[in-house]
Length: 290
Image (cartoon, rainbow, N blue to C red):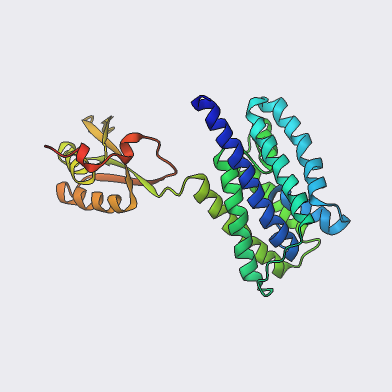
């Protein structure tokens, strides 16, 4: 088996695992305690509460036509992992409903909402991290983005708001507040898992002391520095713009070193979701002078 095939097997296994974890939280926490969920999974809960339709059946009925739409709009290759995620999710939703299991949290809705979001976020994050999805709402959002020009995140937010408002047909407003807590925890955990738990800062540094600052970062922090060529719009002077990716601790140290080397340096700091580079994890000794 070559490397490419092994990655596909790994992706397929982790998407199935993530779907199973999400389904566990969905059945034993969301369904069992009438906690509304966002996305199209939340829509299946609305149908279950109002019409008694099993979420596994309505999940397939809603999502499979969307998969066909996605394959038509975006190509078959990009939709395969989505198909796996959805098929696995609603299979496990059906399976877990057949297995009697009760999680006793003493009817504390705050704890229930926190645990619901945590478990569902862990499962959803795994699915997303390995290229799948657990619902067709992203297909709808991408179609809206392509046809109407509405940004993807706004389209997804609109879908979530619509589903949450529909959920008020079977839950009260106070209980909806707990659903929003679960939704918030879910989104935070998904981001954490999807991005690999990274906490990385990027720095753009403009200084007349670029050689000294880059040497300090490489020697003291063990991080590589990239020079970008810049030019002042007013002065017309050319300068080296330094770009570097740092951990949170290293970012604090870098700010201290920059202040000492050049108090007038311009520093821009921003969040980075993920860094893919062997040099980012190299030991500090690579950059130390012998």
